[in-house]
Image (tube, rainbow, N blue to C red; front, side, top):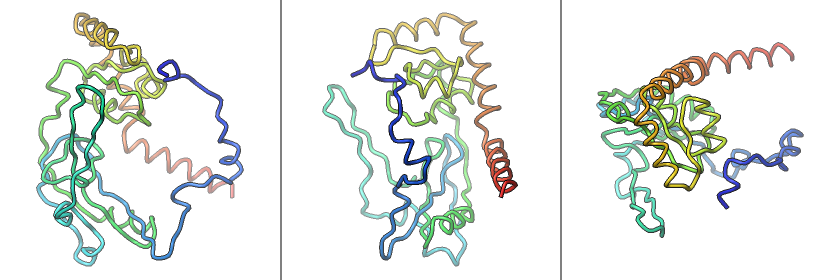
Length: 236
């Protein structure tokens, strides 16, 4: 099975998407249905000092304090040596990754829920990011849709060893060292290689910081979206 990981295959589903016949979860509507949007952490590690919700929106915004009795999400696997981990549905007291969910906002439509989320203010007491205290970041994951940890590592100047998949190469380009997927021995070799080659480490760090600044900053992303919207509206 591992030989298919990272391999390009012809897509069969695009025709219906290009012709507007695709259907997504967001297209399904039911009686009494509500939409939700989330307030997410913009920092990798911080204490949550306060979550400030406008008084008139308190009935539509939910935080960890409102989830009494709700059990955490558990990651389990029958694989030998797998360590079970738990994560609360909404961050309680501390955030540990960029994008971690802090509050859920509920409304009649997704647009209204997004507007509510934009009015929720969170005060953070930033803590040292885990990446900065380590020599390198190993990321052997095989099923990422984007790979936020990779951009976090690059932004903090941490050299990366990642599984050789199409997603990881798209995100990191030549700012990472890649190992053969599912090969623990190759992962170990690449870690030793990176650990012993200071020149390679510096090169990866410089490239990673540059890529994040040019491709993965929120401000630049928003500017590109506005530019696209402007082009679309100009053609109407």
